[in-house]
Length: 233
Figure 1 (cartoon, rainbow, N blue to C red):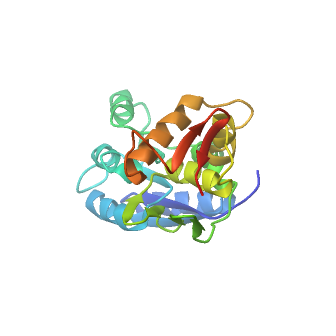
Figure 2 (figure 1 turned 60 degrees about the vertical axis):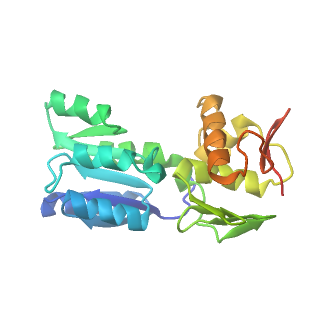
């Protein structure tokens, strides 16, 4: 896999030994910047300020636990599809089911195998690892700020989810040219070889229109074309 930019990972865990172990494992294998939080409220505040690409949350966090934190994060537009890995006790099936119910991407039982853990973190961020951190991009009236995943069109400004930003970045790179949903899946979300449902792209474009178009029902920025979607540059 081609290494791109560093992936921002927020690790919320009150066990200092476990935190150190995870940080060592991940940074040895992935291009990652890791920030740590010792409790739920601190993790939530850091998330809003930093906009991580991935969360690793201990189920037994203090303040509010990892499941409560996951639920709160899913209530923030910017984190609706950000990968969330919850760490919980081995054999705790009830908590595992609850984690998925509140929106977790994966549940890793502790103690865990280090190699497997890294692979399970790598899977949901595979697309992000392919691309370097880009400078701000301006295409026509659209400006993209990668550090904050912010898109601006005139006076309208919106914080995008990682997937929304990735899709819009690909469209911006090919402004004025239609891009198929399959290509957006591959180049934007890292889902190559026919993997992924094109409906996912349709949903992201619909959400982008709601955030950026003057009239989402009659878009003039993100338009449909017989060959796919196109950004009017």
